[in-house]
Image 1 (cartoon, helix red, strand yellow):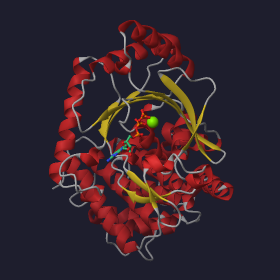
Image 2: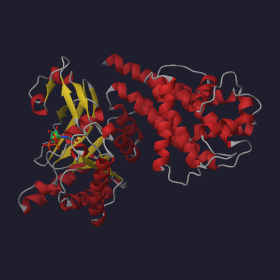
Image 3: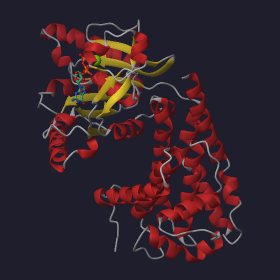
Image 4: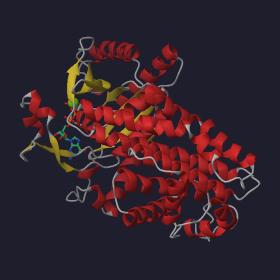
Length: 456
Ligand SMILES: Nc1nc2c(ncn2[C@@H]2O[C@H](COP(=O)(O)OP(=O)(O)OP(=O)(O)O)[C@@H](O)[C@H]2O)c(=O)[nH]1
Ligand SMILES: [Mg+2]
């Protein structure tokens, strides 16, 4: 495990090396590109705050702290496992231990993945007096714990009366604000999506539309209640934390049985079935909500080590996607399409570097073209600059000399996702291209980047 950890660190360092070299990579591009344009590209990449934070986080990260609020059995512990992709050992902290809450560290061997303040929801306290005292003690405990974010967990399956929990969260939030002078990010998670009818579909890839619609209906139901109570939240998302576990010899074990296993065996548990739905999306949301970038990076590092690289790569894609959107809005002397191609080539270079490979900008550019159906062998950047529109048409059909920012963002994101499949997951170029097209289509359908797409 230690070795794995070193491999991950070295891959992240490798990416950082490429990032720091971005200046050089761009300077090496052919001279036909005006210096002003080169500077623009360099400034955009190196000046991007999110990208800088990500790179800084590689050298300094800490486990994120989450306040978890949710009734018994809603799936708080399961969610942590789902985020970490492993059956996480919990080590209770000596600080904790009130009746209402429990502070523990989630460990993977000697690595602390996250720190959790776990509460069962205030509505479960019994007497009213006891409740008030308990509430105050709990709020004090939250303030002492200073969570990076609160995760409020609800059940997709029954329409619980969650008014009291929401009122409690409002008090927590107010108190947090007065102590820390910043807002406590709150993310609402509607768990157990897999149990929504038709229940036989447990594999998220096979959820029929009707199931997805019903899940969304529950999200709206809870969202309305939250709004009525005037609680400010960052985001609400439906997930499934469903994972079935087995021992290395393939014997499935239920959650109840796991608690009786010796520690050694718990550490070796593997996934027998992965029914997780929208967990990566949740992690992206939490990453956005958390303000401290060391904790943000810590969250990405909390995955099973093999997932860390993919997760960081996804974040790089998202950042380049928004850089592309901004670039597309900037009036520039040469075709903005050309600049997008350079940006995407840098993105592909960074993703390849995360896989432990070192590729040149030439190779990265070839990759970008191959996604657009252009056999790019032998083309120089100069030729590309001249023919940019033609090339771009293969990638973003229907564009003229300009690209709308939505199209730019989608194209770049899809290039990045396909590059993850190709360079990190070792998929074939054909599969990567298929994924590129699917991702693009999905994003266009959802109009993910929130503006008219002008697809002709
Ligand atoms: N089908 C399904 N079952 C789930 C999901 N999440 C949790 N469960 C199951 O629900 C039960 C309770 O889950 P836990 O994670 O222990 O719930 P908890 O909120 O930590 O409960 P307490 O620690 O008692 O407060 C377990 O049997 C889990 O396997 C899910 O997304 N889908
Ligand atoms: Mg629990």
